[in-house]
Length: 181
Image 1 (cartoon, rainbow, N blue to C red):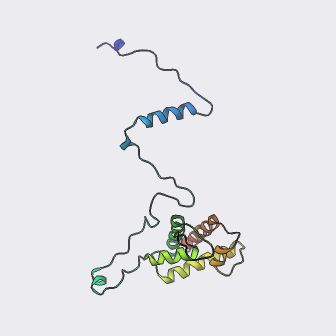
Image 2 (image 1 turned 90 degrees about the horizontal axis):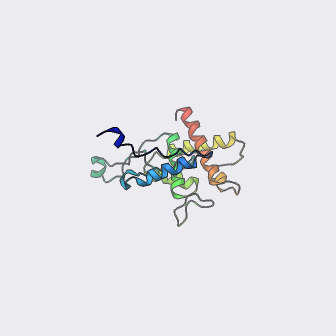
Image 3 (image 1 turned 45 degrees about the vertical axis):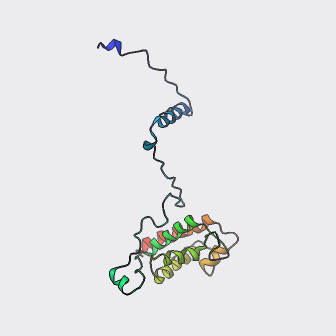
């Protein structure tokens, strides 16, 4: 077949706009033409850690050994670093919601201490890990000039917002990571 038979006409004119809307429309048309299985939604990740994953996605689940089952005891806690505990606490708050003035409410929202207790209750870390993590939070609060007697007082302060809690947890996790704990 000769090449001249394949060419139907000139290509459509290239439309260029200052904001790139023509290109965006072309990409959207192309994506809409794909079969449904080829369109995979990608979770949006924001600085506070909101992802379409469980809060403990990168951690192994606590598993009972044969000896644990024979002696009817709970699984041993998954070892996590202080930095890891603080990151899990922030992710737990993101997943279940933040609360002031109580450990938890009927909707499942928790305060900072409630989130730390929940991470511990789910089998991540030990009470010593939680104590060391709370010390790191206090170090960050004092370094930032926030005069509080405990992380719980900071959590329940009327001027504290959820973003403030996540920021302090991230700073404390970074500090703990730097210290190697």
